[in-house]
Length: 262
Length: 268
Image 1 (cartoon, each protein chain N blue to C red):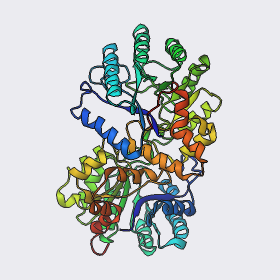
Image 2 (image 1 turned 60 degrees about the horizontal axis):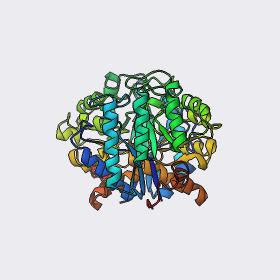
Image 3 (image 1 turned 180 degrees about the vertical axis):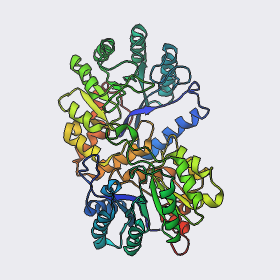
């Protein structure tokens, strides 16, 4: 299975300077080094933009020369009038999913605007990417007062539309458990979790979740450039998983989550 | 050789039924990573009988007893820090004396008293006399007090280091969350403070800026409670264009230099 990283970004981060990031060149260099075949790429600046459309266009331009490896995952702002235009633009650029940052966009993460967006995404068969946190609370910029995504919002959104698919990035063990076991099996099957924020040994949060929640619910994500990508690979190496489970996390689960058309 | 300068273990008093398996998992993961020396402490009863960062003297003694047992059970692999609570000066100095006599290799200060407080002077003095480093829990830029600990930041640790130029200090877990760039700016000029890279934080620029700020000669590798992130940072460091001798300093050379001479003989 070709390794897919669903949690990468390009562009400058609003709250601190990223020396190593910003460009697709750096991203591709890390992907080559770690044998990551493809990446879903978000655009960091857009999370704070009132109108993400110009930034989404910039993301499309950045990724277009590498369309075989870098899949643009633009940002939607459901509080914007005609956000459906941005969804259509995402479809047109071949996005595998779209990012929503309700906690940075000033919206109730399970409120009316998000539910309308959830319905629109479900109709369009477009998964949504929600990010629990971008940085550890302890190191946030003093002006970054945005709350972390609440687990209740994930439960509410996935229940709001039977066709919606959610990928949740940067969740920790407690968050995953609270959502997963707070959903029906059918609801839980539409949620996928990246592994980037789950602890390895000795606490073994990732290993425990693979046993309790199931290996099919997890997918490889690094969080780079905010996070060192090697940590996600190291966590998998420490688990010594059966090949079938590792293949699933490295990409197979993504295909199964989206079904034959995904 | 690979020395983890920031490891922890648990005991039956740690308030968790799985303490033995957590300890075993650390050793098993260490084998996979290639760790040849775990330099470790036990933080009292980890909050079960007294607060993790304000351990009672009884919990300190019990933790150090347990740490000594682990060191004896894994000779050449596990090495102990002597945990102390500096609010109990006499007890702290007594623990340091007898634990170092028994073979522990360093002193662990959690967050029971601000690092720049005069109460830490006797502990720092004892460390210098015995030639062992102090691993000091640090919050990477403390803007306010947080519950559960009297945390210190790099500026406060630097004050202590200035008062004790002959003592070697390790600033704990640069990757432990917080404003690591703030810490790096503080520590540029404090040559008796080393930085351990442990912690769950894996910010990409952290290693680059640490190398730029203090160079490979003052960086130490470690894990703390998340070994996957520790190994990830080590792998990332190995991918940078560091000269092999510089990488070896971070892996083990610096630790071998600041811990007692010969402490890690047989750990390879």
